[in-house]
Image (cartoon, rainbow, N blue to C red; front, side):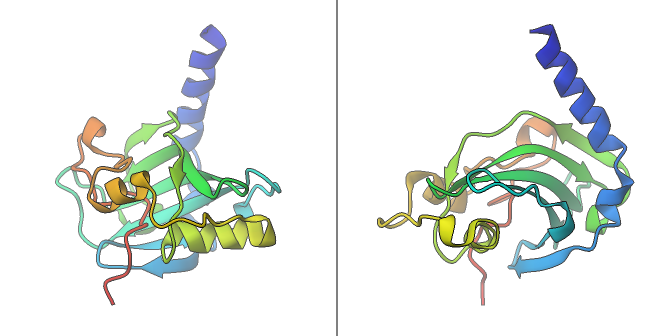
Amino acid sequence: MKSMRCLKWLMSLWLLCQPWLAMADWEKVDDNHLAVVYVDPDKIRASSVFPQAWHLIDLNDPTKAGVKSRLVLMEYDCHEYRRRSLAFASKSDQMGEGKTLFTSTQSTSWKTVSGDTVGEKVIEMLCGHHAKAPSKGKGKDDKAAAAGHGDGHGDAHGAPPAKDAHGDAKPSH
């Protein structure tokens, strides 16, 4: 138990001390009425089953707590077509810069990736032909995320919940 607490503490410290995240060569994945979402292709941790990628969510409007961007380490499950966040940091400035306002190393529960979302674009980028899209319509978790009840990274950390903290809302265009 002590080692797990130590690992979480070290991960939080690591998140705070990573200026390379803000200076990364971010590749735009999508944008919508809430945010512009980027992935750093140079920091992708490749795996045929559980690849990981850093996301930068550049919010169009700051939250009440002053969050203007979020850096999120996402893990994808290529076989089950789902995703979860492993760690995140909320920042006071655009593009992952400025003061770190909140951090978390608590992973969220797995959420099904639905069609026509940022999650689908990233899982296809990371998993390619290994990704197995579900044959059904939207999953229960996707409906909750679209309604603002997803893993909104914020309400427990002082920021109001976004409709989807990972930018997975469908574009408004």
